[in-house]
Image 1: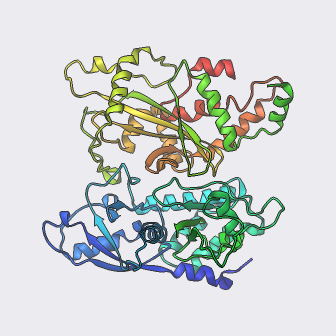
Image 2: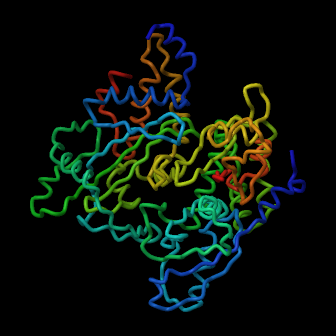
Length: 288
Length: 255
């Protein structure tokens, strides 16, 4: 079991960030051209956590709008961005996964995201993207991950209120030690083997998210790899045995936190070390 | 089924369902309710190469307790919806018109009292004081239980807010408890696992303890099959809070 000081991969993931250029919806600025707001955002953060910064910046530019935080929303190339997804996951899906499919070569950075304060698309986005809602969703994912590991949410529910809050506060205050001080117990499951691993797999083109049960061990009791997990979910794209490895190129690969991990990575290790703060391995499948 | 199979089935009984158990359970439920409520089975392909899966849907008309008919409520605070006007698909409109005509024929059971929209509508031909509510029973692979998802729409299109959900679907005596439950068994929104758009839902974390209790008490040797009554039992608890339930006579004969 790693202690927080021995977890360099988790540390690097925590510190990963994306430069974003927030552009105000031109139809909402009464014809004025506003300077975009540039900010480096942690991949592990959420749009709701930077909404106030953005509003302050645009207010400073005397935009004069009076929307509340529950009305703001974001889109990338016309697609509303799910505020309850971590920002790194949104980038992996909307930019990296989509880019690969279009065979574009240049990575579009900074990420150009449009900000809106009106006409919240309630049929596409969950309502009320406030800080409180974001915290609720975050804790809900952590409880679900706990349930997947243990078959009950007793562990999280038995955490004191201040311990539960420590997770959220560690996240929004960007304090690795505060967050991981509490999270280590959860992801390592107090040293016991998880029944199943919290994994979500995202296929291109808005396929239903794959959230089948993922066992950490195979039928012989051996630890599984990412390849095994992906093969079980999408066998056509991830064959178990790679024939003529030197000659054929893979049909698909997987992204997490913007990188392509080796498919031979141990799944238990990945679930403990490479999970997002919400305790899930959000794996984005990229077709080659 | 032979009694051997029943025994085998009982020895593997669990409040948690595999997907194939869920399929058995919802098909039994469809059969049981075929004369009472028009639940339908919707089939979908989770992804290429995988077997088809399914979930159940039901559309109901529910009398809206909303004060002014037609216009969305002006909500205060953080529950402002900013809802867009949503045009109703012609197929949905047809369904709504048919349901409006058949309202008198649907047995009330323990459902919310539904006003006849034709009577409500005596003074105006364009505004109805009802909501169209879609209920879905979908399998949760994480919790391994059925989950009740729902959305409600005004007839002129806009989806309704959480406040209107409480006013129109949740019995008054339940509202406090449901609100307090929040994400632990109460109502919140989530992406529908198949459609990937926002739906209200009843959080499933209370379902397993509930069904385990019932399973423990359902012990008669020749007893009614737990799996085949799973949905009826579960829905009679879960659905009450939001306006869908099972007619009492059904629960009695199968309980």
